[in-house]
Amino acid sequence: MRRTSVALILAILSGVALADDFVGQASVIDGDTLEIHGARIRLWGIDAPESSQLCRGEDSLQYRCGAQAANDLEAFIARRPVNCVPVSLDPYGRTVATCSVASRDLAEWLVRSGLALDWPQYSKGRYRESQREAERTGQGLWKGSYVEPWLYRACIRASGKPSACSDDANAHP
Image (cartoon, rainbow, N blue to C red):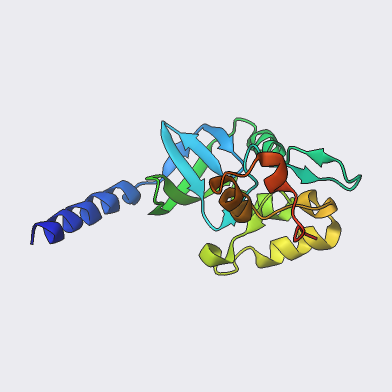
C-alpha cells in the first residue's frame, strides 16, 4: 500500500513538473541536451554523438562530431529564445521535450543537418524523412563514418576508450 502511495505521489508531482513549457535563453550542454533556467532538457526523439565521440569525415580523418553537434546547435540558436514543450522525464530526471527556436524544431534541424540521428525507439520515425534527406545530400555525419551514439555509450560503459569506441567495423555508412 505504501509503495502504491509513493508511486501515486511521484506520478502526480511529475505531471505537475511536465505541465509547464520552458521558455528562455538556453545553454547547450551537448548536441541533444539544453539547460533553461537551471533545468536540463533532453531533446525528444533524437540522439546526437556524445561530446567525447569521434567520427570520420569525408577525408577519413577523425573529428569531434559530438562537439561539432553542440557547437553548431549553439550557433543555430544564436541566443534566441528557446521554447520547450515537455513530453516526459528520462531515467536521469531530465525533462524530455520538443524544443523550437522561431518555430523551428531543433531536433528536426539537427537530424536534417546530419548532426544527430532519428531515434526510432522513441520518435516512432518522426524524423525519418529528415534523416533520409541528410543521408541523401551527405550532410554532417553522412559525409564520412560514425558509430551510433547509443552503441558508443554502450562501448564506453563496457570500459572502452573514446577513440576505440568511435571506430567500429559496423560504422555507418
